[in-house]
Length: 185
Image (cartoon, rainbow, N blue to C red; front, side, top):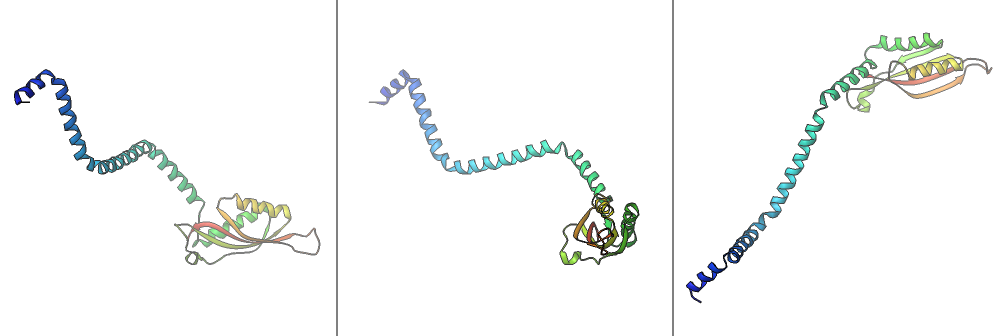
């Protein structure tokens, strides 16, 4: 077969020879580019993850101003319920106010020294500890505890001990509490 016969064959079947040539070129391109395939797949995965993250940021970012306002309002509300560890007069006044509202008799009330450094308190909040002893009838003591629990300050009762004051069952009860109010040191 001479070159003239080969040219005549190509002119007779141009589509077949063109398709074959394109197939050979594509096969060679795939063969030489297949080494880059894992790196390209990793790059695609990285870009897809970053795109998803950015799309979520845009979608959730639209509500940031409302969420910030809600969190700021909640922070102000919490701040209004806190006590200051150094403000002894106002802290004790809270318990005296509860005494007057409920009709109990405070026997002992003291603010315990701060032990936040020993506990390693997290964040900017710390418990301000109090020892409270009071006397009263059972319904009055329960009213004191309810007002303490639902009052203007966030409260946690650490320990409680209740006892009858006298030999008779109709005598008043004595309640000894260790209480922590949420506050700032």
